[in-house]
Amino acid sequence: MELHFTDGDCYEEKFNSRIYLETYYLFPSGHLQEGEYLPFFLKNMVKAFSSGPKIHTLLEIGCGPCLHSALCASEYVEEIVVTDYVSNNRREIELWLQNDPGAFDWSPFTKFVCELEGNRKQWAEKEKKLRDSIKQVLMCDIHQSNPLYPVELEPVDCLLTSLCLEAACKDKTAYCNALRNVTSLLKPGGVLIMAGVLNETFYKVNEYVFSCLTFDRVFLEKALKEVGYEIEQFETFTGPDKSVNTLSDFEAAFFLVAHKHKNV
Ligand SMILES: C[S@@+](CC[C@H](N)C(=O)[O-])C[C@H]1O[C@@H](n2cnc3c(N)ncnc32)[C@H](O)[C@@H]1O
Image 1 (cartoon, rainbow, N blue to C red):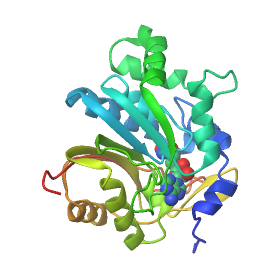
Image 2 (tube, protein in one colour):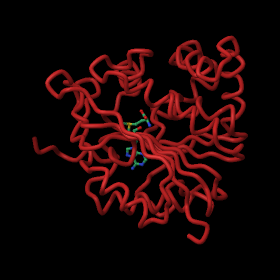
Image 3 (spheres, rainbow, N blue to C red):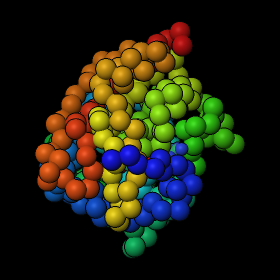
Image 4 (spheres, helix red, strand yellow):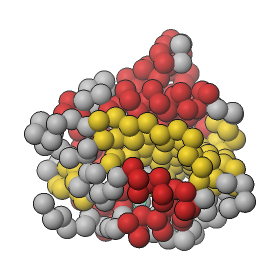
């Protein structure tokens, strides 16, 4: 199916943050058609943070209305900045930060992450810790040379992103440029933690079809190396049979950890 590219304006107008959450982030099932994607993601994320050194600053690119990634990082990071293009997504995050009764309930995720870390009872403290560690919620456009413009941020120790670049880029050239743009926000020697999908052409939110840039592992590894990363871990999860998944058509999901070369 040849799809119309869904650009930033389209995201701002059509991306329904709450329905996205209710479709893909009801834990533990996520969306049932996507199988065990969420446990795959969360287990890898917790392992990456718990086995690495303590991190002072972390920047999440294209977080959407989601906090599950920042949640996995919160125990190991002092300061977190989360960013997204869409104003309603940033509003969802702000609602949760303000403890608003209408905010999305992330507690099933918090409990699961605490369980992975061996202390399920500490979930309320973990949520408090996450609220305290998120210092800013910013607008970001990965197509700008400074994706946070007009904000200037000191390069961070860790860059985190999931399912964003493939959703936001029209073609492979745009993807490589966006990767370069976001990498400029990371310190030399810093760590990139990235999750996403391979060979997906679309995903749906509220029956609206968003385009996705299709690429495979070979392309992704080459792009990362060209921008100056050394890949240390690359995990994949095979997607469900396309005949049972009507919400998206990813062939596999990936989770990777890479370091930016010190001289880049
Ligand atoms: C599939 S959602 C992923 C959200 C979340 N990271 C997750 O893992 O579920 C794609 C996200 O990319 C964001 N996005 C689209 N275009 C963007 C751009 N030009 N710059 C930054 N983010 C963008 C959207 O607002 C949306 O939140």
